[in-house]
Length: 338
Ligand SMILES: Nc1ncnc2c1ncn2[C@@H]1O[C@H](COP(=O)(O)OP(=O)(O)OP(=O)(O)O)[C@@H](O)[C@H]1O
Image 1 (spheres, rainbow, N blue to C red):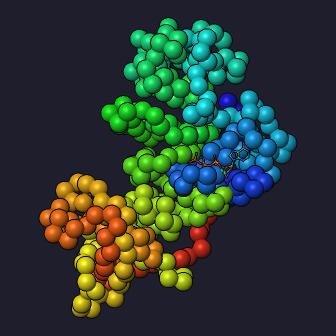
Image 2: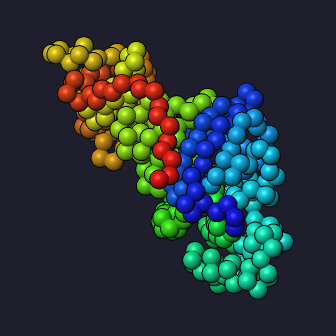
Image 3: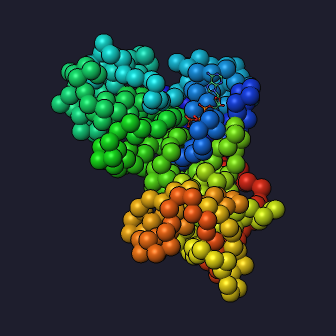
């Protein structure tokens, strides 16, 4: 394949979809980028635009080739996708589903089938090759869908919540299998996820979208440690507050909850009302309507003692030493491939 991203410059795109998205995205060849953000942030729109499934303004360059000047049809983009609404072809067997992408690239049937069989084997579903999609479980179908996307070795792989709708055990196994394949995949993968674990374990980079804009980019570690949106803070289980150009984050376990105004030197204190209390590991996690909304982990004993039920007015405080402070710096673009 002429534009396979082996040593190419990766992905560089300016994607504008009227009223929905205005985002600059860069990724190096071989990188896995997790795309996270709240509902309606534009994650699916971004993937659809890159694949050529929705009209967009701007530019998309993949492995040194422009997909927008002139505009390429979906089938002429070297792209593989696993979308929730992009089901397997119901009338084709698992094998034919995986061979399909190769056949459309003019690979002869015996070669396409041999390659497809190899991909089914890699995902442990070779023995299901002759089954139709309706005869597969959700997890099996998703393995076939991922094998179908990967088989033509696309320069760009787009995965929209590939573990959505699967039960936790199946999702965990599939996450491990996908991680193994992504490690040796030399194209660029964009993975939309609502799961912090996916973002932290599968991705080299995280792209945070908020209201159709890029709110933050960085390594998973950096984004988790210094979240700049409430959504990411919640996703990684931190509180984040913004004071002008400075962000402060702190763990829910660093928050002290009391009924009376806290004494002592705690600089950060808030008054608020308990919205919810739910088990969280060995602790009880409180969501408190303060300014801003905060989370606090308390012991079950304290929960009972202080009567921390929804509606209860409380004080929250946190010591300065437990607070991480960081600047709201302009986001740097993602590095290009060497
Ligand atoms: N076909 C469409 N026509 C017009 N607007 C749309 C269409 N699809 C989505 N939108 C709007 O575009 C914005 C981005 O939607 P998108 O589906 O990309 O978000 P998302 O981040 O993928 O959300 P979710 O996590 O809920 O899937 C939303 O405001 C949504 O209402």
